[in-house]
Length: 82
Image (cartoon, rainbow, N blue to C red; front, top):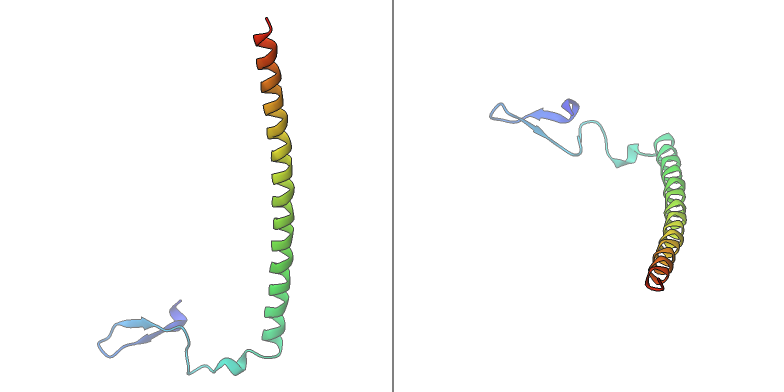
């Protein structure tokens, strides 16, 4: 964070999102772009994996809720038949 701070006229430090003295967006080419591409691919794979896990969990929960409700209804019916 301290690398983005520059002194302001009144002696205080301000932050900037883009330090123009170091370069422009043209510097994000070659190895930098390839690295970002790899990171995006990894994140996309991880997101897909998490979405699949979430779908499987939702299916398991639906089955367990159905079994639980069925068991509760069966017990209630057996209790009323006494």
